Image 1: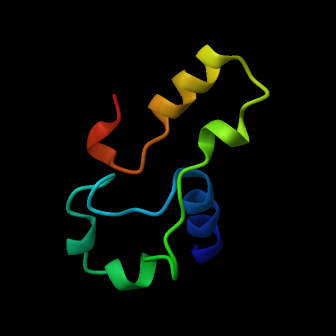
Image 2 (image 1 turned 180 degrees about the horizontal axis):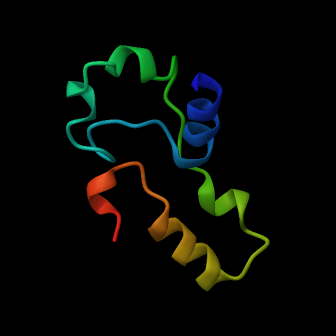
Length: 69
């Protein structure tokens, strides 16, 4: 599970109070918190696709479950 979270954080960035309000209040916060903050790089990772495709993906893939449409 830690490996999966690491892969998600490398693509979506580290969860924090800005991109996922309330994240630090989770009981397992210290277990999931990356050792060092990682910036979101989803757009860079998929830049070979069209601009609209990447925008759609960037809007769909979010850390905060309350933002999922």
